[in-house]
Image (tube, rainbow, N blue to C red; front, side, top):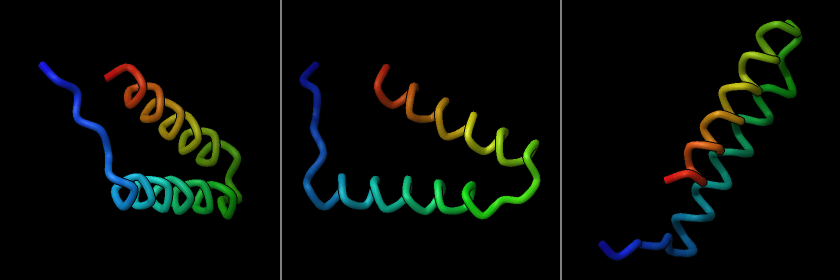
Length: 51
């Protein structure tokens, strides 16, 4: 099956979403919650590159 790539607009949207999530983590004051959020982002990124 042929892989489908992202358009520039889709990629920009993906990056905006990622930046938003990282800004949310940056504002978090509870270290435990901050680490959980970072682990979730890392996990999601890892899944993205494995697909």
